[in-house]
Image (cartoon, rainbow, N blue to C red; front, side, top):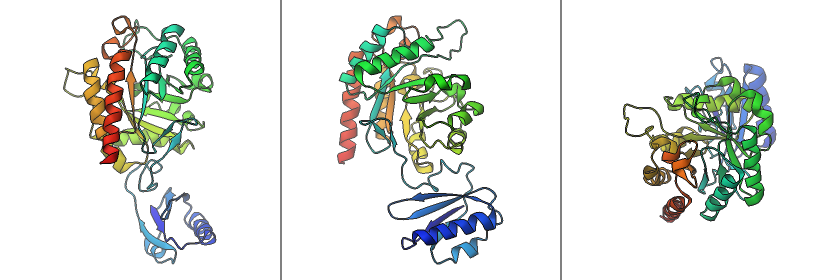
Length: 337
């Protein structure tokens, strides 16, 4: 249930009203103070809440029930966009466009540091790279693991770029203490025990959509993290499995405006994993920006034919420079229109 309060409501009135709701009906109350109004979101069993009584209170502007099972991720409860500061220079969700770029897998210090420098020169503001790699085949390269994390941190020291990397299990959380954004991969989107533990830490989470997950299932996974107390969640559309076999996955561009309507969380798009083909990254990235994405995550490798993972979908630094220029130009044009 959502209760929108009148602008004239005083802090004392709001506190007294909140106390009454919690004690009379046994519900939790989440409060959001917006620019134009204060919104109260009631969590729990609201079937016994008397809507007519609530609506009759002097400080209440409107009240309505919410049918969606996700509450904290719901825009009805949180009308304004969530804005997530990563460091002093990077803020996601404030209307700016950010690109997370780097190799699928960290392979060596020389490789990750050089790629970090290259993508930074082209406008990337965050460095992505896999230290732990979930692979379909048990015989494929699984990443450098803890050594890969150390190499990402070395690249961050060299460039200042915040790092984004994927976590695989609950027992690894302590290892990710100095990671700027923890990525939950598509295969772990419904690893609920992991999501609950990530809800207990104060760290931005990039939650990728599952291979065959609906938008509601995706939002419910975000809800798991947020229910634990961590509101710093970004949603990543990375393509879903469909009947089409030409591409690795099918990028659901429509998910971007749908999420923007249903939720207040930032949306990042991964055109690399969506397509599986480097030549499709540019048009899909452009489509994502045009549809309102807050950022992109793009795979870049200095030698794609010899990459230890996902070389076919990786851009060279030169190709990335071209794509970055085009998407930033598009973003500027959209902002001025």
